[in-house]
Length: 469
Image (cartoon, rainbow, N blue to C red; front, side, top):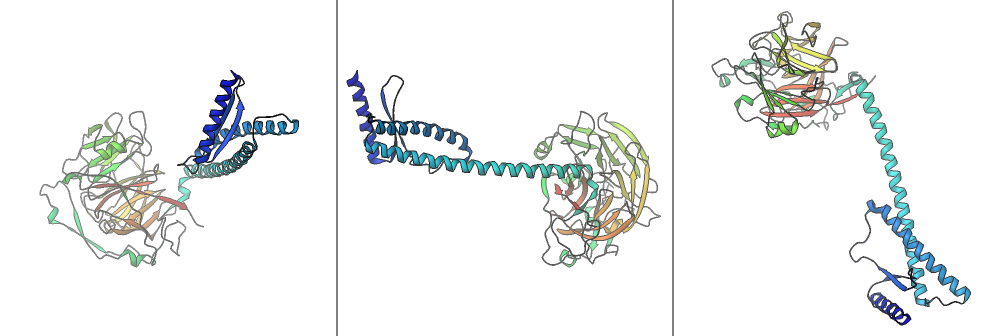
């Protein structure tokens, strides 16, 4: 038995010596539970220069385990030297053990430092996340204490509403609106205007070096002529179990009898073009002024000033009312035409109608509506003509207008605050990437603008900056 054990020991040592001649190795020599002599050596990896940081914890445990064994071996060697007892370990073996011990100790210290550094980074990230969460909660509780900004241009003249002023006042009549025979279908199905525009380049409105425009994100392109312009939205405050804030709604607005409301389960299905349902409205829609709010689809009835609230859960008309004195059928449209006389909008403060009247002589009138009955709660008259702007939307009770629907680099050129009753010219960069933007609506839950730009359904991120005093 002793002879066989010795041969096994010698074989292990010979194998180790052969390996050591070719690669540097650390030796560990110990007896197992039966008293048999065992040699163990470790060779550095020829491929991996270091271990991934993500495996720091298992590596530390492994190093500690090896270190414990080496400390036991060194203790035995030292005890053998002091007591004069042979341990079977020669001077070279002791030197190898000491070298391996030093190497493992260094590795342990390095891994411990890496662990402390990573822990500190995690703590910093957690602290930053807590700060951002607190700020987000504050913004959600008081969203309208923030104001719309371009997020890019650094203008010197900055008003209290947080937008940037240029030396351009949009009330001048730059647009003369004329029917475009090229787009006349001959059946009265839809109206499209062509504006003869005296363009003011954005570079004339903004200080040099500040031309940084928000890039719209395209989600889907319509297939046929009926999708040149339309409405697409998500409900910022959905009601009931049937639909969620992920549900996407779409109406192709070209045609004389627009009734189909396409429903998509989420943005992914919308992008792929797979509707889960198609609702047929009882009465046709006029143009691109429809909106969604609290489980209802709001739209202008074709060839009238009548507003309709269509309940999406019951799939029926819940209420309807005439908007008092509102122009319709091309009396006071946006500059691109399209019978956009009445534009319904939603923001943090509720449901709005953007339109004009004969009394206002074409200037934009803003009315806040009761979302159930559609009755007018309060109205404001602005000092900007509706047919001089391409589109408009509401954010936190403020009206914002877009200067052009065709210029690739245009501006949001006017703001009217219903809280103060004051309007003023501004210049916030805005991009019409596909050069025919016929619908712009704000979603306050997502802080995004939804737009329909020449067959393309796009979104813009909206930044609400802190109002300056």
